[in-house]
Image (cartoon, rainbow, N blue to C red; front, side):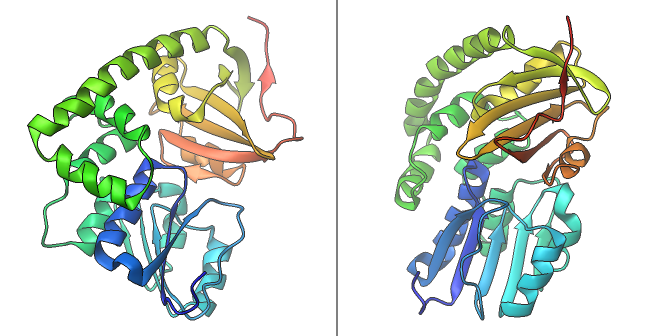
Length: 280
């Protein structure tokens, strides 16, 4: 860590939307800031007397209260309903459920500039609006590129022009076809379970496919879907639901959070699952 840098940017790690928000900050601060991908449960970097920006991420209430005692300035830009109270404790904040973290960050740091098409696509997938043309294809293609500010700078330029954007659409077409086929096969291995008094499906699958798998579960008539994966010494549990179940509320019981239809939490790897397998 460079002790001379007074600006610290913390963003949601392992998330396209989180990195998109960090990229928006990088376009503002460049090398004047330090950038850290963070997750719940991780130890915090040294933030004493720093100007801190939290993007697409917010710590729980008690942690946020402690941060306010040591930082010079705390600005939070987020759209996760589960941490609304924490967000609104910050010295400055932007909280809007209608946009993704990346788009909110861009509008905050570059209020006089139009939102890059790259970030519009990030938002379209992140909040599962799926309104833009070839949004799934471009979203899948984007995941295959390094989360590097320089790489995203190049991608943003090329996505603005339909001629150069076609390359990424073509990349995504075959990948989407493959992922759709993969989801069908993965669903065959799903277990019927009872979780929070609801009959649903649980499946061990890559978390990056959580939204696609959750969408398939919804179409099968399940109000809540569970997608879990081992990651280090934790089990990452992603939830996807219909309007009948609040995923964020369910996740909050296990120390997690997110949105009404999409949320997540983590479990110690040796802890029993909070759902019970049932006979078909």
